Image 1 (cartoon, rainbow, N blue to C red):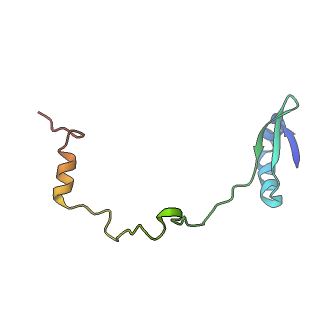
Image 2: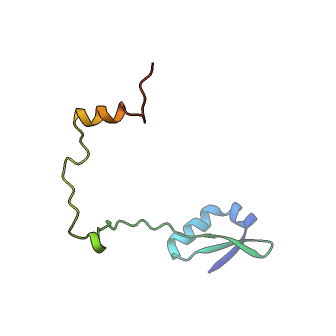
Image 3: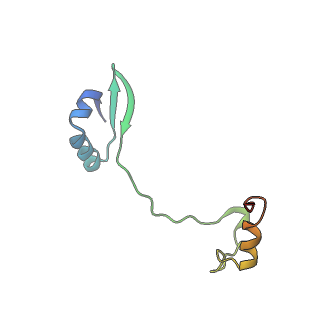
Length: 86
């Protein structure tokens, strides 16, 4: 694990980012001899979330779950949450 100070990190940020990407090793950035930050590679997670636990198999979402009829929409927007102007 590489350790560097703030001024060196500022002057060589592109290089440090390249090193982190290539080696997958984080770099510690310090100030006055004490670590204050860690520069590490970003890893995108593409895993999909799954419903589990006690709700597994009990919840079904239809394809039109986010489509509302006019009556529902009007009752929402004409409620106390969205009072009509007088």
